[in-house]
Length: 228
Image 1: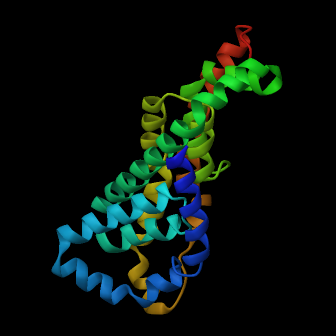
Image 2: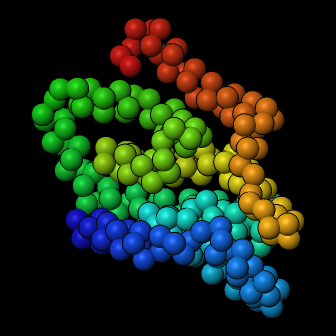
């Protein structure tokens, strides 16, 4: 349980220490220094950014949205989105593995032995793992850190978690990275990023389609009298 407890302790400490540091205002103040470092040491900037993003997600620190915006601001939509996806996915997998190693297997055995509603919920999740894991990522209903913890606590397979995470976060990463890529003009006018783009039809439409694809297999199994 040491890795999971260490992550928990650092997450609490980081939430206190970095609460006011990882913000849009901080990015605006230091944008010139960040651009200068990128222009002088591009490869090092990429490595530092991906490593910092990975640690931020692994320790559940605040500021993931700002980090994604920063990736777009520094590196553009492409290749910025790939760097954002690399950091977010790697950090999520590290957190998942640490929590599952500490709690997942033992907690799953206790749930199965105890029975009841939680055991039935875990059994239903096991029967629909791919779809549920994907839906947790592609919809904004479940917070990102919770979508890392819940599968770990239920002892979900690591390969399925990794693949659904890598694929499911692509739509959100594309939108946030594109917003970050346009922050130069926002900074010049002294404005703030417009997250209303998430409600635009060209964004909502594909996401709804992905959700439908994720739900459809579950509904088909339900209609075949399998337990949901």
